[in-house]
Length: 126
Image (cartoon, rainbow, N blue to C red):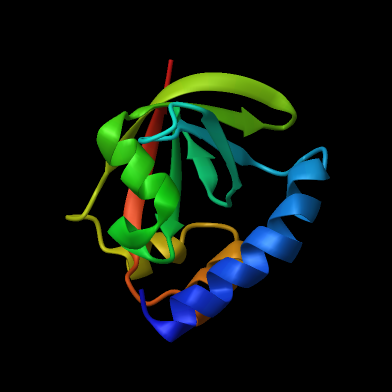
């Protein structure tokens, strides 16, 4: 893990994520911990297109939630305050910068500024 990712992770875990998880309309991703088997909740940003939620991860396969998805791609996603089951699919063939242009600007700006190993991700809702 490089310095930039370490600094972002510390800030997100200790400050940003606890606040964002409490916001009623914050989109949340619940994965299953690959070691613990416990639910892990991560605030995310992206966009629902048809019946799939699209997003870009800042640190690709170095993100803990992406590593959890690689072990078990069954997830839950909270959209507009309601939980939905889904299947997460890593999309390395999809250009993440092009995808960010289609996603909400506020989140895309942060991902562009902070990320250094961008990876496109799709969650197909059941």
